[in-house]
Image (cartoon, rainbow, N blue to C red; front, side, top):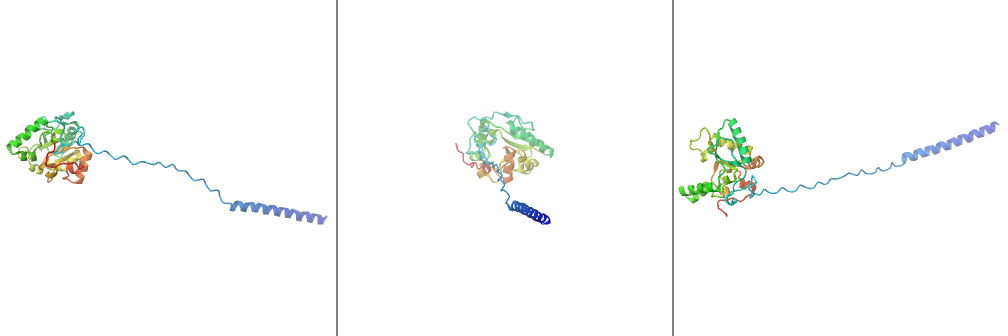
Length: 256
């Protein structure tokens, strides 16, 4: 009986040992089995096309604030802006400007006044007929050649755009600096030189640029082109011309 019991015990131990080895083998296989490769994450790629290049301004478009009037760019015959209005500023006469220029001029005059600088609007929109009379007067008084340096022929005038102004002194007017190069040394001239671009205006005929603009230096003549462009022009150089910045043909010779 004892032998039988001993034999059964031996058999039981063997069975248990085999079961243990099988379990251990399974565990080892699970530990060494490589982990399944995760599925790659699919990313959605949005392709952004480059923006279309901005169209160049149409310098012949009379509705544009960048319309050009110089000796090589003539305005349409009899052109008159459709949105002329009276700016609410000190003025020497009943001058008119295009709406956006008038509002910008009011803002600039108010800023100058706050700085103690008193300016007066000495000229603004001029019709083609008015410009003809003006140029003929200069030509008779001096010569056609001299008139072409200091005035525009009818149809070529920056003033006819309704976006140009001549600014004169206020309290000190009458000292001989109005419409004179010495205007640059007046409080009004200095303030405009330093601040006009902040309100959308540029000096239209800067010093030393007559061959480019076609006209003698006029520190009193400013042209409205909008704040963004005026700031950009001024950032290039304080004497940068409209023609240079926009690569527009200018010069001293008239072209039909």
